[in-house]
Amino acid sequence: MTDRVVPVEEQIIQMSMLNYEPLPMLEVIAERFVLSLTSSLKTQTASVVDVKLSRFDYMSYAAAMAELPGQGLIAVCNAEPWDNSLLMAMDSRFLFAALELMLGGQLNKSTGKAATKPGGHTFTTIERRMGQKLAELTLAELREGMQQVSDVNFVVERMESNPHFATIAQPNSAAVLMSLDVDFEGTKGSVAIIIPYGTLDPIRPLLTKVFYGERYGDDAWRKHLSERIETSTVTLTALLHERSYPMAEVLCWAVGDTIDLRLEEDHPATVLCSGVPMFKGVLGKKQNGSSALRVTEDLNGRDELSHVVDPD
Image (tube, rainbow, N blue to C red; front, side, top):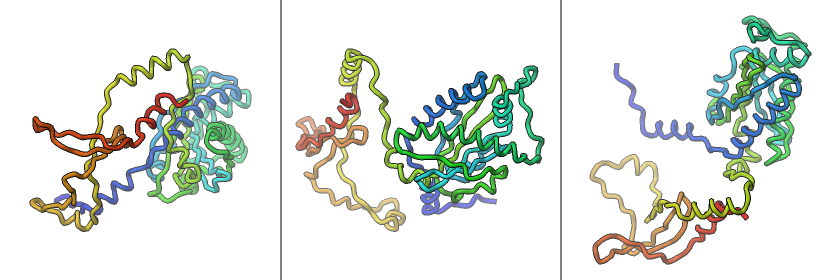
């Protein structure tokens, strides 16, 4: 039995579905969310709590749903005023350890574990309500982190124990998965938050910006850092020409074909540094035969890069 040969067109479609726009600011928000949630859970449970961000991944909604805990509660939430939804899932170990401590109980010191639901057992109304309160507490900390870029409020609409009843997006749509590992005095549980890209659409341009951090340290240290950066080496790329071709024409290319680039001998080139256009220039040759480029126009790329070194 031979493997099926996947056509080039289908491969392109599959690869395009796997490419998700990174959201650097959201990653920063997630890290700060973990710190604030740790402090909040310590206050609410009066115990030693350790929260870690175990993973932050861009994936399809179906793949993210497959990573949810097998047994627990899922909070289906509405993001106001974005007018869209997100999910927060809590496994039973996190849920019952947190609830037991919040109600003044103590974890089993001999095993370091809290009670968990037997397989297939449904959650009671009281457990669902307490789980919703715990979800609201967690989402309140996420809302505080989001305040850096947008005013938003996360409202829990309902609690579900079956993931099939918590569907909020198409299986192939892009989503962000944030998984947290929570340790209550030796009892370890997990929390997962799934945010579809559609939910983030109103603020996605803000989340795609690179975060350089606040200004810390004295001026002497900043001057030293700037001097070290200025004396470092960078890689420059000379982009000679770009031309678009119909996909149907590209798929018909074969070995031996001649591609007309429509490139003149004195065509100008663009010099880039890390993708930032720096200069325009004209290509030529030196007396020893090596290629050279004469700068004819400054594209202000130096100013843009200098702002990264010193945003002031």
